[in-house]
Length: 167
Image 1 (cartoon, rainbow, N blue to C red):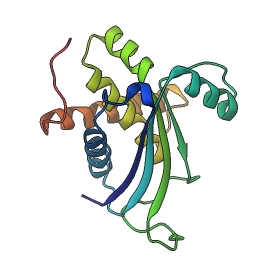
Image 2: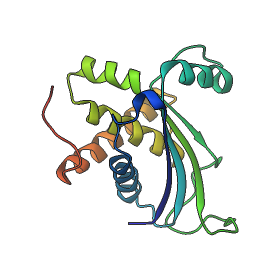
Image 3: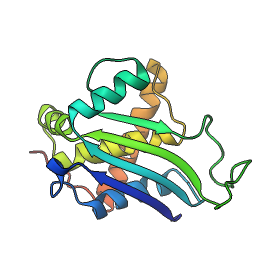
Image 4: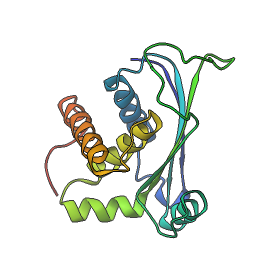
């Protein structure tokens, strides 16, 4: 597994509800299952609907809350099995930020009748896949991305990182 410099920020109301080490393992396993073999840096932020709505409006022009936003620092999807064309001076591939709405994750877990940890893992996976260049803007791309998310979720369950039971 490639080294990952992960920065986690959990807003005060949600501290104690999300284990930072568990988040790290989900991110690292997602990167490994995507074949990332270089050292990467990324951030994960757990916040509320108001903050994510503000970001969504400012950066995507959508005045609505959402479940997850990704802000990639790279324009294209490079081959991550080798260093990118231009390697940063520190030798680390800086991917960007994944921002999750904890309240929306709770709602979606209840709607889909599965554990909150599964929903949080799904949102983290989704965000990391976006940072790696996966897109879901059209129906075909969305189907491919959903299939990849489900594959990774299944493997995380097999690895013991997720419970499989429903609520």
